[in-house]
Amino acid sequence: MRPSESFVELSPGPFRVLTWGDGRETVLFLHGLTAVADVWGPTVEHLAENRRYVAFDQRGHGQSPRPPTGYGTGAFVRDTLAVIRRLGAPVHLVGHSMGARVAMLLAARYPAVLRSVAIVDIGPEASKANIETTVAAIASRPEVFESEAEAVAFAFRNRAPTPEAVALFLARLEPTGNGRLGWRAPSGALEQTVRSHRSRGYWREWRSIDLPALFIHGGTSNEVSVTIADRMCAENRKVRFERYEPVGHNIPLIAPERLAQSLEQFWGSV
Image (cartoon, rainbow, N blue to C red; front, side, top):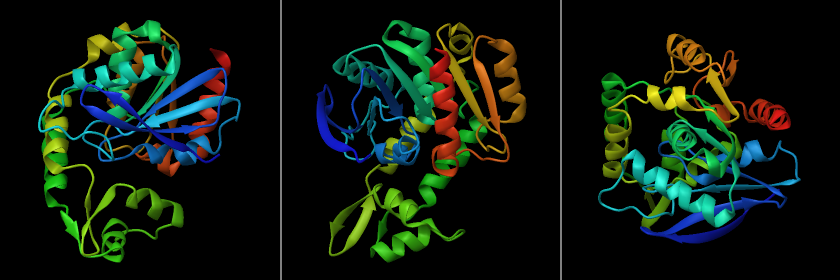
């Protein structure tokens, strides 16, 4: 399936939306930090064609608004809630990383708008160390690339790229003139997001999730330790738990077919 592109007007401005297929049930996907809606394409390719699949560039990312401030979790939850209401609730919600945190909070606070929630490799713990590591990584990236070739060489300096991976990476960049490319997600917006989202814990919200829910843990994830994942399982046994071994954090790109299989099985039980 190829997605159609549209824009939905929310309070900060027009948000970019991708839609695959059509059907009675709707699935809404939320991407992670620095990513764009396009990252869900590989997963959608392995899903049944009898649903409508939707993903949008979240604030500060892709072609959606990049306000100077306003990157707390509440703003992301409100954006998502507004999109869901435009789509026609309830929906199945799937989030990865930053998007999974937003999905977790929305499931805890607004369960009536959801059929189910799938939380892919994020935990409810606060982590100052994680904040500083992530902010340092953002600060160390080149702000401008002289060419597409230079950008691709930077992104895939430690691994061989596939054409699909290159396309998904380039979707995170935009022309800045004279053949140069820059990031669609500004460093300032990303740093605000990281510091706001990861400075507090969300265990109370995690424990309160009571609708059909799935948590998928990357067994070698650098975002969610085995200890935290096991604690999550113990503190909310209503949530279905899966661990992917040996898979790291970026599950939608590393293991999209396996993720699609897990989602199909989960939705089949809802």
